[in-house]
Length: 148
Image (cartoon, rainbow, N blue to C red):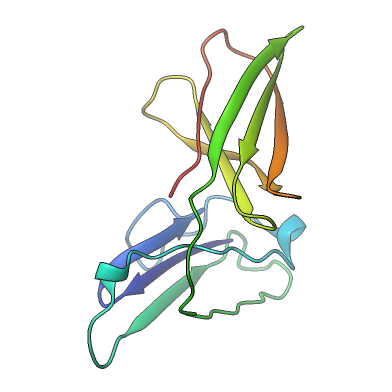
């Protein structure tokens, strides 16, 4: 399932949702991430003095699928340094990508074969501020990023 979240009319998150039209279906189901929580840092400049407005649109991948669960919070907090890659290895056709960042952070890893078409490849939860993501090398050129 997919979501787009807006703060004061500015998009701050888009996940599994390609188009901007309200009738668009999500690009994939999240049945394996039912109780998964996404923490998304927001630039302080997106907030205004006084009243702020947050809006979310949630799209189903399958209109006949199981029940949909949605929760949203906007919490003011100090944000630690963003997650970053610390090493890449390709051993026997398997990429190992190490990531460091704030302890307990859920990190989304995206990949692309051409720097144009990015897709979510997986998620990591940083334990003691670190985790390693592995991916089978199906293409000699593979690029990874951590979307902010």
